[in-house]
Image 1 (cartoon, rainbow, N blue to C red):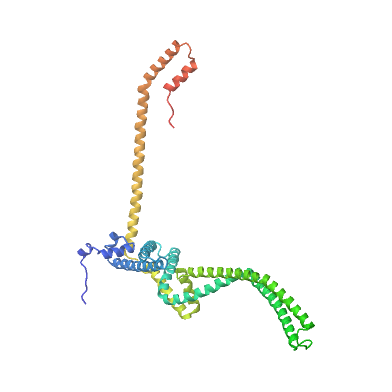
Image 2: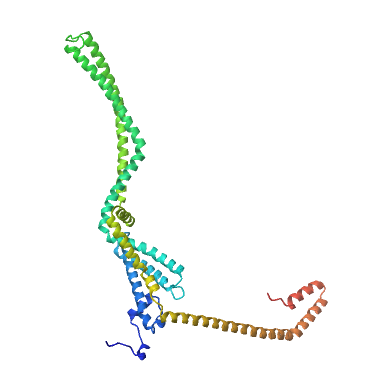
Length: 399
């Protein structure tokens, strides 16, 4: 088998393609250091591919998530791209922090793993909602019906006391009418039987007993008419109050029904009910969660598992060089500043001494002039002359 090797002269002139540069950027590799690391080129391209896959998955998952919140597809897509960019930034930060010095330290890896798992679990939810979309909508219809029943029960409990009192009042009024009506009916039957000879004295015709029963019947009937005139308005008023309560319950139920939807949280609840009530769905649910979680963990896993190569060594050495250069440059800059300050101090010292030497004679002449003026004056005291001289001629201490 013929081995395809690259001459040494050509290895030094390797120029990565734009796609390769993009993958290296995704893997947070430094192009200048990686270009000459033949083996590590492919390793970091693989890491870049895992980051690219996670990024694409994040965009799709978040776009579907926002599509359940907003009705505009374009807005959902833009928000998905925005959140996908945030996930990309987090993933690049995670794999950038995994290097030669902390690859074998469990605490940093555990922290990055927990962060990746948290992000992955949330990102898995929209994907699962999409995969189980039909089953979820069936469950949503069942859940909404249960919500309506629960709402109806709560409404009944709220209005129970007032409604029960009205129903009891109506039954009492109706029972009062029924009782009075039964009395009137019994009196009428007794009167009729007395007149046709089938009851009472067995005498046909309107005799004394029949007349007495007729009077009793008429009296009871008049009482019934009065009771009915008094009770029926109360029954109607009670019916109106019950109608108002029932209408209020109906309006609240219709308003609650209008609020029912298939939003993100509603779908999540339906998915949870599916998982709880169906073992077949539960098994595939947890299997898909594991797969989707693995997608988010891929960059961290790939960066952790891939062996160290010459690129890691170059990064370490380059970082040491930059640290040494930084320290050296800092020392040089500090020395220059100290030299500047010392030279300035020396020059300023000489200048100040020359200044006082040159101005000594002039100060004495000005002092003599002020003393002569004081001598010639008649009202100015010695203390006043001394105060003026201090202001004009004595120096002020530097702060």
